[in-house]
Length: 498
Image (tube, rainbow, N blue to C red; front, top):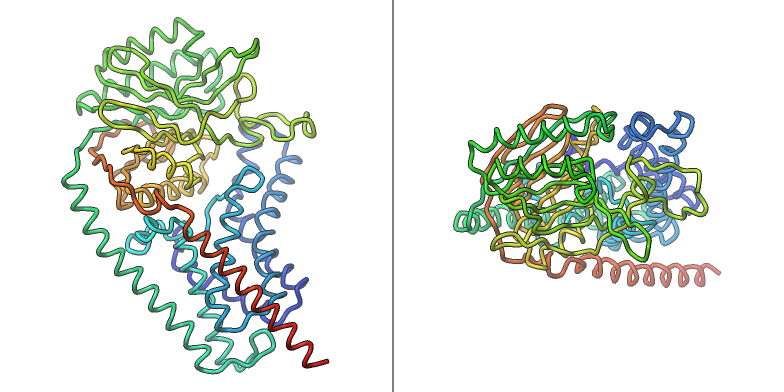
């Protein structure tokens, strides 16, 4: 996470290696590059599965390898398509980033989707550059990074006197991509600088609310133990009462902070509601829930909105569930797999894009890794949500880079939709992000905390909230057009050779 500048030329070695390779060898080079990247990125998976999912070591390691291989396959496909079409330098400068972005988008929904740490996320701390996300999303930043890698590779190939897919590159062909990148990068940087000023002015005029985030730091190994449920609940209530001195308008607890069913456990529910009344403010509380439908119980991972009188005003049910965690996809094929998340029954998804009404505004509540899916936050913002709330339980990840990776992706949801984002995590990282992507405050991991901060409520919809897929559609068109041009060029060359 501390090497964001490397992303701008990290793929140059792979790009140079595949430039004169066959389709098959290009795939192998891309796949190997991706596999090394992803296995070091999600190295924490076996610990998560083993420590908290109770999966044996001999099973969790293969899962890490399989997931890394699946993610690496996208980079392999990227390289293979280039090895097959063999684009010219001029075509490459647009075709490379367009193809990359299209594959990143496919990864966001294929096999339920896993867009963890797309290339654009590497720039989460590059405030000027990430402002283009309110037009193009994180994919726009990915496009810019691949544009940089392609430009650098072309310059190196030219000055080494090597060929680019079998053709010598002229100085003009090498310089033109670099000039295009410099022009687009400068435009993005200038846009970001000006946009920051505009957003700050709008935020300064916006209504402000005080939100308190409660980080209970509950050990995952005891979280669902009935013997610790009351002490867990009392700890969260104590921290909430401590935050009362800051006079918050809303108190937010993490995902499943209340590890019981409010509809069923009368004793603990009474303690919870009394604690809310004593704090005398409104709460967002993560807790499981269920409904009886057609003589069948359906379980949900939910967030309750409860007012200062202890009345339940609304409930959001998580819509994008964690495969093999909250449910088992293709369960008939994998009946032997246990869930990573402990709790009763398989969870069902709630409806997508639903906002929660609170006072005079609407809330976009995203639970756990729903925050890594741009379309979910975009749909809620387009439905007039003026504040994004992310509740999560990152205790699964242990002391690894995963909580930091997870938090960095949340920054983009704030920028894309021009909304303040507040994030409550059981063991951290909890924090506040303003509509420009600045981190206003955040907690350390594995420490209990109660943090209060003022955030602006923004109402104007960003371009990305309204037209989120505009860049994806453009990239799809570019890939189709340039693929046809490359194939036509290749067929003519073969006919002439014949």
